Image (cartoon, rainbow, N blue to C red; front, top):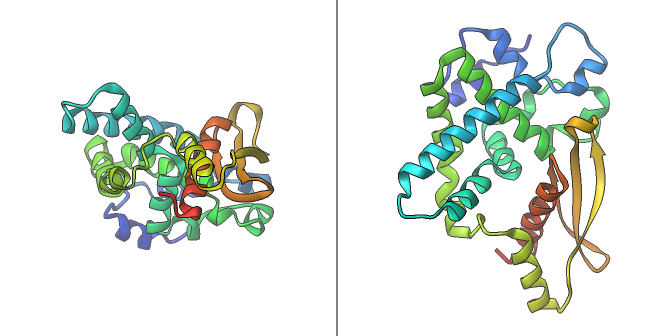
Length: 228
């Protein structure tokens, strides 16, 4: 078991169950080469639900005059994989992951979908170990705190539509998307998709379905082109 006191200090949570803390970082690939640990997938499943509830409650309470459509866009931007991956990088979660040798060699510690899933697993673990209020505090500090920038930068808007409009306006071309990679079993796939302008890949994104991955790729492309 790793010494994760640095992580606890960073997030301001002291785990009672250190085994639960350790499990946050166990990617499923690690189990192909090692025994004795459980993957973080069940924690991720739980954390996803807690995250959704806390974010929805905050948006509903904080923006009483906004309609459902805008609130949904705000929520989607907050829980999007790229946003959660940014949170993971701020905390430094990638350094502590248990990965297979192959996944590690292929840059797994920096893959957005792995980092995003680790944040959800952390939320699930905090909920189990500390309860709802502490997990809510964590989500507010690390996830909901990004909302002001999301609104300021327009990151809640439909990225694919925005990217297409900018590409046609600036370059008189229409973007297209290509699947670069698929990982995982059929019931739990992760897609990596590239956003292209002509033959040039200008963005890349991951997601649990192609639509999410395309949105993340479009966000990446907008950022890379300076069109945000």
